[in-house]
Each structure stands twice: as structure tokens, then as C-alpha cells.
Amino acid sequence: MRLYEPKSCCNCIGIKKGSLTVSILTLIASLLNIALACSGINAFVVGFAWDMITNDVNVSVSDYEWHEKNQNRKRNFIVYAMIFQMAWNILLGVLSCLLIHGIRKDRPRLMFPFLAWSCPRIATEVIFAIFLFGLDIYMQKPYFSFDAIVFIICTCIEIYFVLVINAYYKQVKRTLSEDHHELKAEL
Image 1 (cartoon, rainbow, N blue to C red):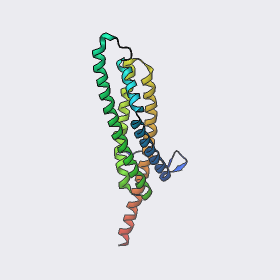
Image 2 (cartoon, rainbow, N blue to C red):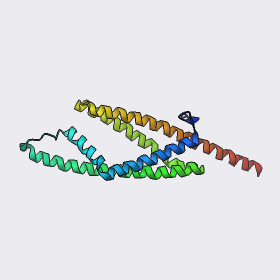
Image 3 (cartoon, rainbow, N blue to C red):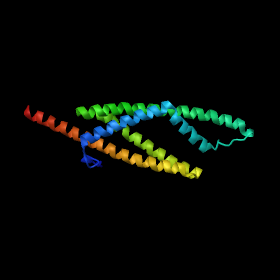
């Protein structure tokens, strides 16, 4: 099965410049996510979602022991979620740097790690969106459904950008292969 190979990025930018633009935007987004995780904003959002899921906003005095255990679980979950998010975004930032250098120097080996990481990353994002839809059905609140729809739209845009980068990767590989065959013919 062949993947779709766009001839340009967004029908207005060449494939090399489009790939470079996408990789720079990915690097900026990963750095922004790292900054948000360090500032505590993401931890606040995760804590707010936890409270909505567990209905821990209005707890009576008789449920104090349960409330205390829930708060400990909440703190642990937030810490692990932030560690996971930091590692995820640091890896994405490093792979984006490799991708930028690979695009600038036309080296497909430097582009490949980003493309290889894109498949599990996108699969994880799709699973998370399905989880949000399931959470919406379970909680019967439209908050998570809206988040899931926005998440799916962003994932679709991300898939298109990965296809653009993949098209440039294949173009560079074909060019290098043709150059190799020309050198062999000269010898």
C-alpha cells in the first residue's frame, strides 16, 4: 500500500520549505508544552479534570478519609502525568531538531527517527481521543467530547504534516538513489 505523497505543503509552499516549516513549528510546540508543564498550568488542568471525573468538588465531612486517599492518588497521578508529558515533549523536541537538520542537509537518515516516532505518537493520540469520547459517554458531560473533537482535528492536521515530511523524505531518498546509480554507471 502506497501512502499519499503531496506535491506541496498546503498547495502553496514547496515540499522542502513546508517540511522545514512543519518541523520548526513542531519544535516550537514541544518547547511550549515543556514550558507549560514546568509552569504548573498543565498540572492544574489535569487536577481539574481529575476532580470532574471523581466528583471530588463537594465532599462532605464524613467522607474525609476517602477524600484524603483520593487527593493522594490525584497528586501521584499528576506527578506521573507531568513526567510522561515532559519526557514525551523532550523526545519530540530532540527528534524535531534532527528533522530540521536532516531537511536542511538533505539527509534521510536524520529524518527517519521523526517519521518512525510519528506512528506510535499518532496512534497514542487517537487512543486518547477515543478515551475522551468514552469518558464523555460515562460522565454524560459535553466537556470531554468537545476536547476529543478538537484533539481529532489536530491529529488529522498532524497526519497531513507527517505525510508532507514523508513525501520529502522519499523524494530525497529517490534523488540519492539516482545519484548513486549515476556514479555506478560512470565507473
